[in-house]
Image (cartoon, rainbow, N blue to C red):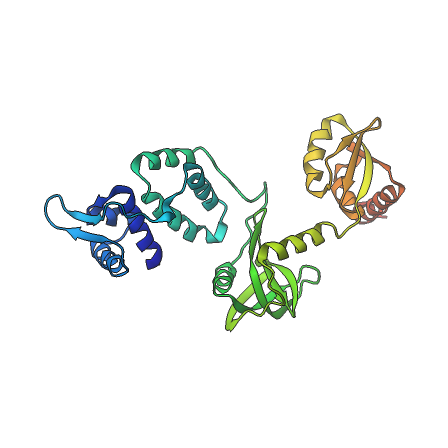
Length: 314
């Protein structure tokens, strides 16, 4: 986009005062003709920038002119660089913008920041979890930026069926590597997993949300409602010491409190009975549920179902 390129040109000149057109073109990956047009556009917008001819000429920003958009500290710049590694399908645009900002930083700082980036890696997806396919993300991002209504073809997680809905977006959220669209459907705020959006189409009509709350407020409400929807259950388990560390790693996402150790073994607070059964049954005889009785009964029922399917043929 031309606007971010003009900003990058201004930041370069602010950092260096004077640069040749070929040098600006190299840093911003454009032609010298594009640089000349951008300098004219900046000048027409009132920025005191001009071109000097001759051996020591170049593009010059009048001394003393400052803009307040370049006051990023090294820590802030490193955070931006790290964020590009988490941005997923929006990462190309973010990486391009950050690269242009980095080009405007003085050489000494740029070297230190680039070195710091090579020493930190941030990945948003977990082990052995494939990256979700989100072909609709770009369309949704444009709709959110334009504050437009969106027509979705969305696949339900519970029924597996696909239906069409028109929604009014609040915004997009990336949580643990999964993108969600937060939007009002028929006046009720909801969250939609972007990898279940089979198609998205902007309508051109302005979004009509039921209230003036911002994305952060609505997301916090939806998230808290989801996380507290089930009744937690405290489960006492005895575990083979050789399996203890693996057990704690596997069940961690299903716990609402840190595990506690008691005289009999471990005390684990699961989100719900179903979460406890699903997480513990796979450990077989290495883990025994000591209580409560409802979880022991649920474990026995689920084990009986498995035996019925995989047990010896009669």
